Image 1 (cartoon, rainbow, N blue to C red):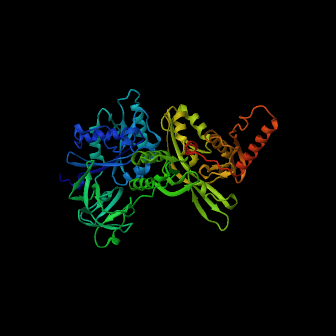
Image 2: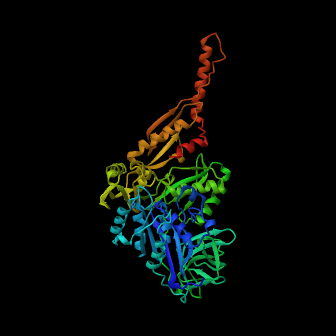
Length: 596
């Protein structure tokens, strides 16, 4: 089918998690005949088993559809706050966005966050209310919310049920009529934006790209402007949604390009692809800010022999997940492993689950933490640390700063007091409240990242019966009174259990860790002390009583001095053991204590 560039529409669907993006995408695939009915299944664009099991989209997924002489390129995006990086990459490759809002939930925090991203790109916004078929749907209230938010007439908001297929044709009509076509020129030199990439062990790096200017075909020589890598194009094509070969990709089209490159670093997301003899004359496209990890955790294989398998697994996951970062580290009792950086705790959970499933790895995963900024005493040196092992002595530190974020929470007004009470326990700072409707409030706070990103979301959902939603944006670093909490077992420091905590919470954290250790470390032949320390000062202690062997059991009758002699000998032995003996902490103990 030959398509005029004026008839190309590139768009994505943005919303809060569980608003029905993947279900709407299913209906669009059906209506446009892209997928035969006999092959159709729910959440068709969620290709990973993990996405289908959890009912969430994790990776962006492009697909090409044809409808009434128009070529429609959809990029299905995730809704969870941990994957907003995927959303921002998708938005840079399209000209419009369908803003999908759940009629039973109304506007939620991540709806606002994704809308702001789309507005920053100056995209055409098509407002749509989904799930109007539900008994608890508040359709008219939700339409009113959206019209006020976007400053549009209420009749411009499309009411649909993606599940039932109601009014989905109106969404297609709005996409064709309201989203502008791409303005690039096919006769200009090639400029293509890489918005995602994948790796195939046989074909090398596969770049997902948007052709901004020019055209590209198999056999052409291309250059990546940022990396300087040059290669010959092995294949070009589009997503239907499986990779489908074409002869040529022109300006305005979204497709893939097989580079044959074996090093994914040479074909980075956000780079500009061009052809020609003088790539230095080509103006690069605006790329993406590199994703910065917000949460860190250590991965150790339970079997030391699986270290190389873990290394290989992380390297392969990194190829199509640019936000995953890792570096090797080792810890006493756990051996060799990796310190990994993630965008959030759900991202951490997904990566660890994929390693377990795809590589059959059993892992010990440490409690998640965040990164901190340190300024040492003269000569002053600024450093970013994410591991307690890198934390210098307190007398070498001039100032410690922790990351803060801007937090937005949308909640029904009856839970406002509960939400504010919950936030008062997190050292956060109130900014403002704004009523979206008489029943729904948007609350803005500034808060320390480590108080929010680890387990606050679960607490918020529990406190508001699941109705509140939140989104956050990293802001800056603020001074904080942080210390390194050390855990000592029989006088020996156990690095695997060390962590960076706020000074006022050090006792509470230390007491909790040694309490769990006392439960999981088996009794030894000598008494074992468990201690929590800050800057060499013990702040909490527990003891594991010695396992005592009955050395006098075989004696009967006779002089008591024989018993006393044996007991004295046992006492001396235990004293010597305490001095030289080592506590062997079983692997299960590390597993139970490190998991929060």
